[in-house]
Amino acid sequence: MDFDTDSPDGTTLCERRPPEYVMTLDRLGSLHQCRLSFMRQLTRRMARENWRFTRPHFNLDEHSTGYAVYTANYPGGEVSLVAFAHDLPDELRSDRVIAEQWDATFSLVIGVPSMDDIERLQRNVPKQEAGRISETELTLSRANRSVRLWNTVVEALAKGEQPEADALHDVGYLMRTTAVYGSGKFGAADREHVREELDPGGVFKGPFAAEMLSVYLIRTFVRDLVNHAAHIKGGSRSTMLDPTLAQSLGIGNSTGLGMAPFLINHPVLINNWMMAREEAIARVRSIEQVSANDINVVIELLRRTQQMNSHWTSEHEKQLEKLSDLTHDLDQALDYLITNATDTPYFWNKFMRWGRHGLSMEGQECMASLMLEPYGHLIDELSDCMDDPVSHTLRVDGTQTIGTVKALIQSSFGWAQSIDWSTEKSIARCWYVSEEKLEPRLGERFEETLEPYEQPLAPARDAIATYNDLDHWDDDTRIADFLLTHSEHRRSVQRAQWHSFAPYSEIRDNTIDAEMLPIDLLRAKLAFFGATQFDPRSDRWVRICLYPGAPYPEALGVDNCDHWIYPTPS
Image (cartoon, rainbow, N blue to C red; front, side):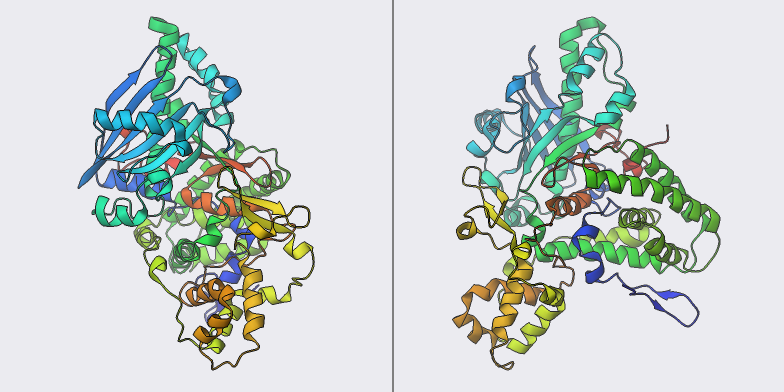
């Protein structure tokens, strides 16, 4: 696809890359974190606003069980993470959503909790889905220890020794979360209540801001917990985890199919994420005179990315191929930047055009993220455009004509008209919700009796069915009249109308195809979180790392609040 337009002087008019180019599953499954990722937005804000952090409670016993409270004070308010540590037998430790016990459980609470609040939370938070929290709580989460690393670190520290850095790098975390729930789940405050009542300053306005703060504070608790466990075991001979080693560790996360439908169910929000990223890329590509200093910043961060990539491991065949491609691409891109670092006009645009033909998709998207780094002054403001405060208020516009709706469907799903929707391959999968855990699942349509329970997560198939039925009606007829007869198409009509102002709202692939990989959906969302070290454990769930390299609250400042995501060269 050639979407660049050459201007008379040989430069390129840099518009946003079009949806049909960026909204395919293979490209979404190759996204990397960038300046607009939610973790980095949060750490920049905390440093800029000079947030203050305290630990008013740390009540852990000789078994490392008990509770702790971490409070963040920000302009206009404060919020606290309440953490509960448990003594979990190894045989009960599981990342699966069906687990009922965990090594640690958490809730993010507006204000500073009273002892009555802590006792109420202690009765409910460890139960997770089986308990209930209140509308003054923002999130509910849980985490398990890394079987590979936790005991190793505790044993070393208890002897007064530091664990081996290579062992820490190989795993990347001491605990991994298996869920961070928010937005009204299990009694927590929903986003509208947070926006209108609990958060007048807009601290949690951005997507997943409360969840990202929860994980940031969980990471601090985990560091403190491992130091406590080592002291209990080793007494006076024990030592604390070296700050540099501690900073290298993040929080792991195991994410499965429960997250995959999010991109399909929130089309306007996903449009806002993707449009912000594509606008940032277009702005940087449009810089006519690129300074040598800016190029050198990208070169330095590329070298640090190479180091990060050297610790990125996986056993998944597809991810191994992508890692091999990325290793080669990073070398090629570094050579290009060093060789071509001149005052050539529109340098970044030429770099992107070279990458389209010289790099894999994984490498292209990595470079697209890296070249944004020197330009916070130009693109950071786009983070204010990534929320979706409107789609829940929008209703179907019944006055639109059928001809208008057909044109909108053609614009967003014209590509799907070439699919033969009568073949088993094209409709092989079926999304449904499990009865036990009320979590999304993906089954095989022709092997299981699932169709009666199918969820509307095949927008391409449904849009074409809508278009085909519309084709029997007069183009000048109001869409309201059509929906009175065909109410089953209301969702597709609404999505088509949203597409008129949200061009990046739809995935340009068949989400029920036999060869569809749910991990591509997971990767896209997690990249916007700011996740690194994607490690698919199957085609349906993935492990990641959050906040590796981030400064802890006591060390966070304006000088280290952003590029921590790229490891310092060893």
